[in-house]
Length: 199
Length: 199
Image (cartoon, rainbow over all chains, first blue to last red; front, side, top):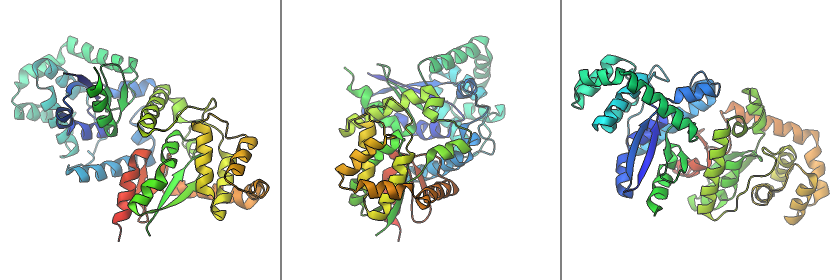
């Protein structure tokens, strides 16, 4: 089965739109999803941005909120901006990385995005992350231990380097097996179609 | 009939995608299009950008070219980047403004975008603009005279101020009669649907 890389950042509003629909869309296209959390903030920093472009450019930020409100409404999805934006998603990303090894990365990711953008919770809070892990049936002690390992931290940093090396500059991004990069929730169908057509 | 404002910049690659399909899409939705050329460069400048973000952020620029190549191919549209990007679209915008009064703005706009992004021509060249005017049956002398009037220059600058005042930060943008702002060729259908549903 063809595999599509799905690169996302936990603080990213548009990643929320994709996280909540990608498995269903991929199943319809008969494509497998490779969940790749990374740290978009590090890539932003390397191009001189200290925070999200939605904060740096307020008119763009206002449009983003309205755009997602409209799309979420059309999809029957709850959406609210968290008080702190962008959230610090480092802890969530390290846990997700631990979950990749153990098979719960996708479930954890959906729960974190729901907590953040449907319930308005602060996903930098260990208590919030612990409740999410418990809710999806993960051993929280083991998960936090794996997330705190130097190997996990290094691996996450290396993934972010790799994202940047293959041209990822925003989230969500999709990379096909033959290296085509698609950016944005609104390009998900194109990325799936492209992957599906590969021999 | 409901009227949708279509804000575009002559140097904008994504505006090309919209220019070449908006009349047909609008006719299907039973919506009228109000063609509003403006100077996006002035808005970029006011937020500290000296050129297109696609030049300032090269990975974003590379994705934009590939993204448009893919979309253009799917739509059967020729696309090539002009040698000089972004082009200086001031002369074209002033002529388009003259054309708004006389009813040839849409035809002129399509011809300028085709010259730039299908044929790779330099639309800052008066000779190129003159050939376009002739091809669409416009009196070139009168058009250039109107375009050079202080009133035309002022009106174009005022339109750009108005675009900024209503939150336009990129092109193409669409503004509905009730003030909803949509940004991007990929939001054209949403903007038309929104306009169509208004009482």
